[in-house]
Image (cartoon, rainbow, N blue to C red):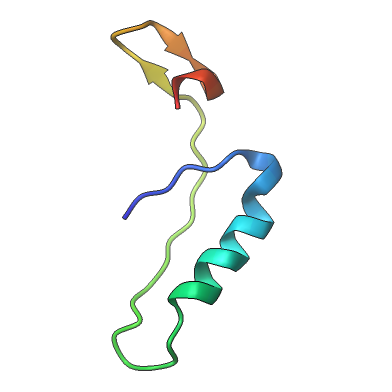
Length: 52
């Protein structure tokens, strides 16, 4: 699963995602977080947050 969220919402969204996915059992998986520096929608030529 890949999720892209606006910088202003990262902390709250990450807490909500982890809280809803964590069971405490083997198999919960891992979460990796990284920044997205730029987004471009090729079809429309949109860039930045508007491309998401």
